[in-house]
Length: 374
Image (cartoon, rainbow, N blue to C red):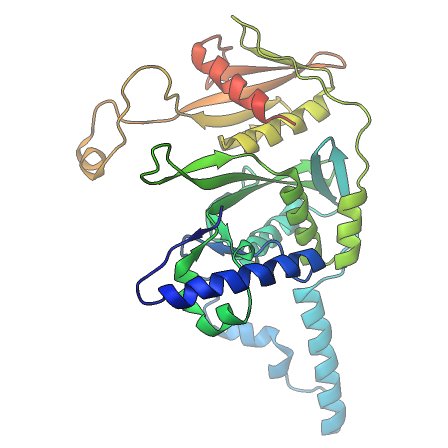
């Protein structure tokens, strides 16, 4: 829900503007003239920069002396052509070998390029979308953004353009998202998965204030960001939208057995490859912290802090970090293990040493995971 924070200085102007802008926004959305996703990070980050040095000049054709004898016009024309070709290669390389795969509501990209080439492009992509990065782990192939507000849900129009920064402090969409991207190496190709967490600002029951609560993940939003990533990698806009929209859904619907009382195992009626993919997306959507993974062994390494044990847990402060503290929060390492059962799969929880777990914590991990598996 969009919130309006009125200040004493701009109350009258903004109140009138809200009515006019709301009407403009509705018309624009109905006609498709307004972009539905326009993120602004709620966390400031330092922009990426490359320190100047002489090697940069050596790579720029503007600083290369012409070879042989030529007229100035021929030289200038040649340099312009080289710069145009170089800019095209750097800014928007022509993309080939990108497919959109689908399994139920889940869509992902299969790119015929090594992960070493794809990973840095994905990092650049999120910055271009207006996000700051909360974490990135090249070893695990995971990139996670910080929370960002979708500014497209705030009314646009000539009044906002005129008031500028004033409305940026007055309006708030009351919604936040953060995205996680995971890269997998599969048969010489790179698979890219995007998932997100959604939060909404809602009023407390007694009406005395507001609080942030988790909302439901939108598969359509994940698909939209995949389309944007395809465009960033060089696919035509119309083609990217077409591929994401027309990705064929697998006719075989998966059946996920619910966790049985007294057991710490989940059964899936599909082979290892699909189960591995589904568990990975479930881990991403549930927000588990992934430390590493080993596909050959069927293990996702996660860090999990169980807050439901009944034991009081205290967060570390600066003094406990300096001098040591008792009973501070520290996440334990677990493995979510996917085992092939000949046409079906079983998901269990192992400890850091690889021993099967039947504890209440293991059951809670699988319960959360089951709710987020698509």
